[in-house]
Length: 145
Image (cartoon, rainbow, N blue to C red; front, side):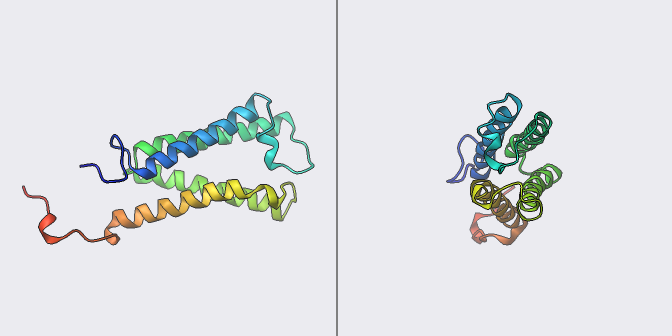
């Protein structure tokens, strides 16, 4: 039975991951096909080379694929962990580029950190609730065989 936050069998977290996958796909398109306005939005004064743009496009395509696959397979623990780690790696990469190498300005990070942070928090809460730590069902609501 579908819960209040599901539509056509996909939970709300699944819809969020689809939206994030679309966002990451747009970033891929921007980096791969030279529009560069979106792709270079994260960089500072240091211009991105063609190789940098293609690398960012490939990484973003992989992470968007993980989001799409995970959205429809939230019960697959390995895929779930890989998708979660893709957000951790993205935040870690952006933090290192900003704080250590100074290639990204902190003012350009809020959108990316909001998306990654929201995704990580929601995925942690979803996993916590699916492991029996969420609200308890009443005794009368057990499934009869």
